[in-house]
Length: 305
Image (cartoon, rainbow, N blue to C red; front, side, top):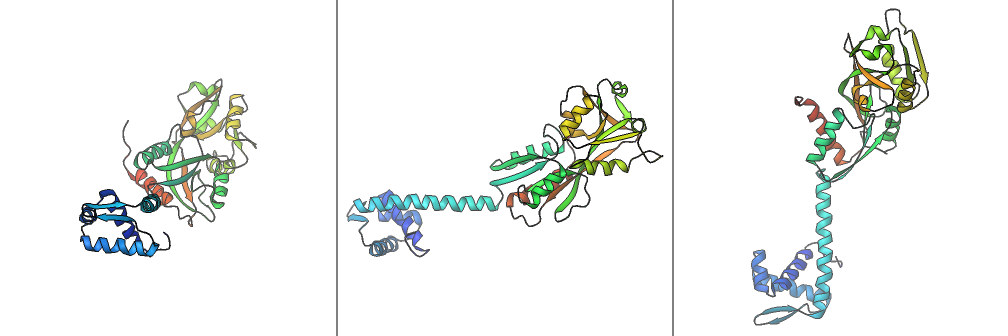
């Protein structure tokens, strides 16, 4: 401020307090220093800037016209400085800032929804932004620093990024509501081996196809597997239109698509793995706090409804 040495900020605060109290004695007492020390510091400040800041009289002091203008600007500057220090401090503690999260399914249900709600309760001043996209798009966004953390399906091999398994969700089959299996509460995996399965050929479609290939029947194939280069939403619309059935994670079952029902795959129970992915060089304090929060949330016993 005005080219002063760092210690002169204290002198500026002395002058502001003296102006507020109309007294060097009262100002010095509030700082816990002697009146003479405060008076000398203010006199030195006046000599430095070449103007008298105070009129001194027996009952106290009063700011001069020049002093009032000077101290008003000083007060504004110090308020800004205090604010900047506080913001930097809270950002360093990850209490404020911005966190950009990539998600695979909507947040209407599932483990990630619970994590986000709990995180918001603990750190309400951290702004959250969400991008819904497939695993491939999320990993690209992470490498290009467009998001801070992503949640993807499967993908044990993630090149150039940090990642760890976080949870698994029960697998469901999406069926046309007029499908013969739609009347069942649950569906056996063996029943699906005789059905037409449709999958995506891009983004998470490739991951899902690899995951599906590991769970083929004894003869090594499905009766019919057809792929489409479409979005998740369009794939489900094709299910509703009778083109076939598709496998989804439990968190996707809250998506409403006309003509589509979801049934849990049982015998055996099948689970779809999710991974948390981030760029190791990302120094966003809010990211580090969020990663820790996710690990703590996952490790905690699941609360009963």
